[in-house]
Amino acid sequence: MNIQNQKMILTRRRHKMNGLQKMGAVAALAMAAAWVVAFAVLLGVLMPAGYDDEGASALEKAGILTENQALASIGLYLIPYVAWGILLVVLALALHDLLKAGSPAVAQIATAIGFIWAGLVIASGMVAINGIRVVGELYGTDAAQAGAVWAPVETVVGGLGGGAGEILGGVWLLLIGWAALRAQELPRALSSLGIVLGIAGILTVVPALEPAASLYGLGLIVWFVWLGTLMLRTSARRTSRTPARVAAG
Image (cartoon, rainbow, N blue to C red; front, side, top):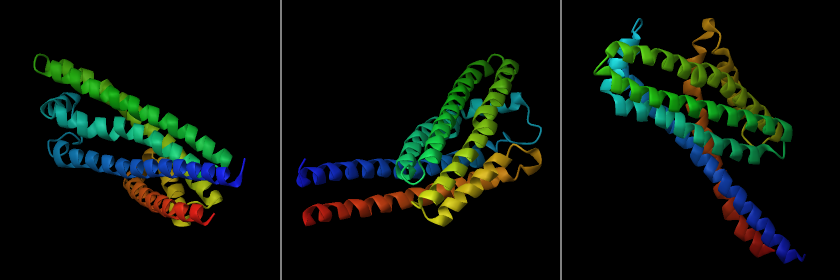
């Protein structure tokens, strides 16, 4: 194989890597936006309606969901759960590609955990969407039964997407931050933030440390935006340098 062919193959590989990095960057930014949508729906619509009030019964919650069925299904579960989980797969692959050279073992473990986390989030979102549909169909004829249906659905969603999801998300962030520090592919501050948020996510399972959930959720939005912006800029710089290198060769 001559030198020119080797350069062409190297250029193609760089373009493929840059393409995956761009997809990962867009995924990270979209994931942050998805959580902003969820907060907007929860804080702007459901909480003012009394959904999250202390002591709110499953029957009352079923009524609120029925009144806001489309908004709750799309804004609270389809976008922040189902679509978010799919985007997580893309981001996990992009980060694995970025970190595998400097920290192969940790990056591979983190990717596997990211896939499991994505699966749980998608599954819990689908359970919630179907539950809201069933509740909406029942509420007009048997409100008590609608409440009885929603209570276990909420428990399952909270267990899969909440408790288990926060632990897996915390472990994933912790490993990504660790791998990034070893590989030196991301700024130390961003990597360190990932580790801190990962620990906070893991600690959310301890009732006494429940405030850690707020740090974890809001901090993760910042982390996604920071990561996505950085990956876009890095990919753009690599793309702009590649033609010059080929021409120089």
